[in-house]
Amino acid sequence: MANSSSILQQLGCVRSLFTTTTSRSTTLQTPMVGRRMLSTVYSAKPDPIPFPKGLPDQFYSQIPKRMRPDLAPKKLKIVPPPPAPQCKDAVAAVTQAQLKTLDPSGKRMRLFDYRRYARSVKPGDIIRVTFKNGDPFAGLVLSIKLRGADTSVLLRNQLTRVGVEMSVKVFSPNVESVEIVQRSEKRKRRARLYYMRQPRHDMGSVENLVTNYLRQKRALAGKKDRGNKKR
Amino acid sequence: MSPRLSGQLAQLPLLSIWGSCPTVHGQVPIRTFGIRSLNPPKTSRFDVGPGLPILKSSPTAALERKANTLPLRTGAIATKKGMTGLYDAESGKRIACTVLQLDRLEVISHKTVQKHGYFAVQMGAGWRRPANLTKSLLGHFSANGVSPKRHVCEFRVKDETGLLPVGQAVNANWFEVGQYVDARSNSKGKGFAGVMKRHGFGGQDRSHGVSLTHRSLGSAGPSQGGGSRVYPGKKMAGNMGNEQNTVQNLKILQVDQENGIIVVNGSISGPKGCVVRIQDALKKPWPEVAATSKST
Image 1: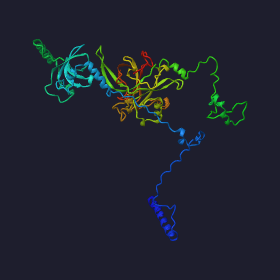
Image 2: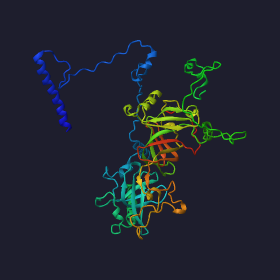
Image 3: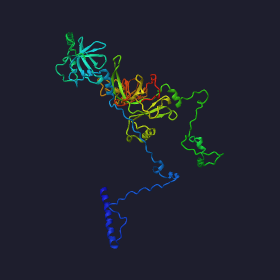
Image 4: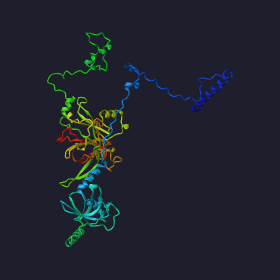
């Protein structure tokens, strides 16, 4: 309904146009002023009347606040920021500094970073770790967690027929040496060999393998000072 | 005379135009204005008399009370970057630590006892685009000559000796290796959590006739004898986490002034990237540093 009424309004305008032309054209040819047209002529917005110059201060109170020259907003001076810290990854920076002191030659990193170095320890290998304080521990590598300075390996063995697992922080200053006793025959298809905990997959004790390895090592060391895998 | 107008103002000749009453002995009658109570407070007759203790509700009394528990110098706004481990040089033991970073930390303004009733240093960290700031904050920054900051907070100090000059940058070497700090930050938000997770309630049985209410609370309170109502503060399900938590007495393990890195022993509440406020530990002796010693 609103639609039709708006059309009607416009039509009414047209009608007025017709009526006036017919009546006026016969009598006088005077131009029409103020006739309603379909379109209105664009006229620019009039400029605001400029402020009288030298207006005394006592008249300021009569002017609306937004126009008062003495109340114009002041331009804020924004100070540029100081330079941001260069270091984007703070944790990595701390880790790198740690590794520099813990593993200056990078040998330990190469021994465990199995994603980059082919000759590294891999899950499924049997390794023997000796400590500065405490007994050495040997076991099957179940998983290697690569976490920079926090890198650790999970070793599994059986002591007195009881399954024992030990997580060794590789870069700890307590870890004196890491030797690879035996590499796994085939590449394991998993990065975490937690299925080796199940009885049907459990390797049992690795004690025999380690004693064999140590005997061989001693023999080789006695003959000629070679074949030392100690790192 | 109105309490709002000081004596000096009352003697101004300009104000005489307001006078509606006739002047008496040259005194200018002042228009009283403002809202006044119909029943002005009266002192109780028991509160007057000699030998009564002075009330301890004034700002000066509060400052005196807090003299031993307010740090001498300001703290810092840091960002939690993550956790890692450090190895102790002697024992070879691993120490879990949190890595914090300072980002363009500067003093913005002061709070003084004369004006605000307490002493504090307002610090700002990071940078925020001026277009994204409110005009009032922007005006505050520009008035103090400091760049627009993302994070702003106050650190209370004991007295005016702890007020660092405005605009001074505070770097990681503001803290010393080996000193202790308190770290406060918002914990990780857990959303709307049930009573078992939020308050450690035991829940209800899996079976024995329990149906559909295995993880809910049992009763919310006693019956008629207890007032037949739920007492205020009853532990119930609700929003968990994202609350401020303070971890006290964290040792500073490393300080890297160049990168603004501070390594702190132990853990701090909140996710990575959260804002952490660190200040000298309350429960340890204050570090042997001048309160406004230059840091940079």
